[in-house]
Every structure is written in C-alpha cells, then in structure tokens.
Image 1 (spheres, rainbow, N blue to C red):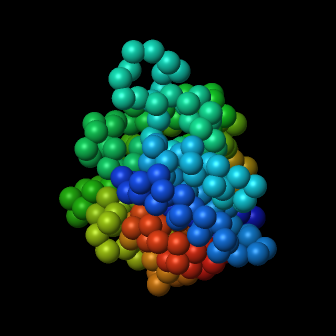
Image 2: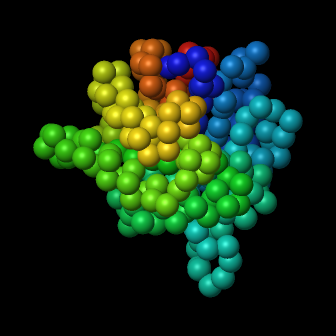
Length: 254
Ligand code: PEP
C-alpha cells in the first residue's frame, strides 16, 4: 500500500457469536492490539451483539461496524435496521453490498446505492463490497463487472461523498474458500477501481480512499497482499473469529 493511506483491517463476524462470545472476542482483541497502533481496526459483530460489543470496546481504538443496514429511517419494515439505529448502537461503519447479501438476500447495485446514501446521511462510513464470481472471472468479465458495480452502486455520489467511503474488493470465489486471490490478481482490480475513481471524482479523492481486499485473508498471506501498492488493508471473515489470528493480521497489516 501507499504510506499516505492509513491501512484498515476489518473483521466480519457474519452470523457467528452469541452476545457473551462476542464480548469475549472483542475484549481479547482490545487487549492484544499493538501499541502504537498504525492501522484502523474494525469489528462487525451480528446485530444482536452490537450494543454489548460497543460497551466492551469503549475507550479503545477499536471501531464498531454493522454487517448491513436498510435505507429507510423508520417505519413498517419488519426485520430491518435503520442507519440511525446503528449509530445509536455505537456503530461508526457499516458493511454494504457483501456478496453473501447479494447471493442470499437479493441485494442489488440499486439497493447498495440506496444504503450507501442513507448510511452517509446518518454519518456512518460505508465499507462497500464489490467483486466478481468465478464464472465471471473465467469468462474474462471481471473488470466489466467491477465497472458496472461501481457505476450503479456509486451512482449520484459526488466527490465529497465518495471520499467518505471505504471500498472492499472481494472476489466471490475467494470468500470462505481458502482460495485467496494472488497479490497480482488483487492489485489488478484495486488499480482498476482507483483508476475508475480518479476518472469519476478526481485524483485527490481516489488517492485518499482505502480499498480493502477480502477473500480468505490469513496471517500467512496478508503481508504479500499488503505489499501491493493499491491494497490498503483487509476485510477478514473466517480468520477474524479468533483473536489470535485476527491480531496477527492486524500486526502484519501495518
Ligand atoms: C468476508 O466475509 O468478507 C470474507 C472475506 O470472508 P473470508 O475471509 O472468510 O473469506
């Protein structure tokens, strides 16, 4: 990565951890954070554990994220959580457009776009996930898909709004599969994303914005990924569920 951008390591706990388990994990992570800390560290527990984890990490440099959000501010939307409910629970960030939301819950670039705007409006930092499937990669469609996710997902956002995002490139074939993109494969897409951003909102915003890589990141592969100039950190699933492996990634992600 380029030294002008502070790296970020974010742990996506997905549908794991009871409240008590989440509190223990958060406590262990807080205790094990490197001093001084040169990386922004984020955890995204399930909704049910947000408040408890917020209390647990109070006064620490750890930041809290949610794994999804709805775009409406309130109303008859059974099962949905509004941006304001997330800030009220102590969240500073929210993951939007994760491929599992797209795959299992019908998330589209259009809903991603609405969620980004609502999250920004509420003062949250969206971590916006994009990435291609294996079939799309094998059909040489990766960059076309990424461009389309960017064009539609970020539609209508101005430079100031885009500047408040964190992007995450997560090839779907690498998520939870143990099959990480090579640093060269990831760098190609990260470079493409930054170039797209430069064209749309200018080089100042594009150069300042962090683009995380996600997909089977481990303590063993994080260093090589972070050496790529346009990879600014990691969105970590499986390896974020144990404090030891997550903390190693944090330490190596600096
Ligand atoms: C993710 O959930 O965003 C992810 C990248 O998962 P994993 O690290 O398990 O591949």
